[in-house]
Amino acid sequence: MLIRVYEDQSLSMKRVYEWFARFREGRESVSDNHRSGRLVTSISDENIEKMSKLIMKDRRSAVAMIAGR
Image (cartoon, rainbow, N blue to C red):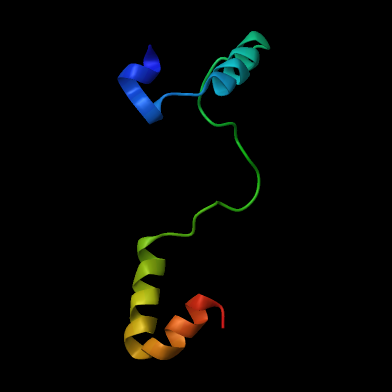
């Protein structure tokens, strides 16, 4: 039924069973658990501005650096 309505945006049955098990074990929220360590993303207005300036200053070097060459 959900697949007919939400198509590819619905959870698979495997994920439904995984979440069911988590709630049965006492989980009370679908929010992510706190994780230690560095954030997954480093996108910020400051970093975007720095990269824009670097690219405008020397496009070839910037492209090579971004490509990891």
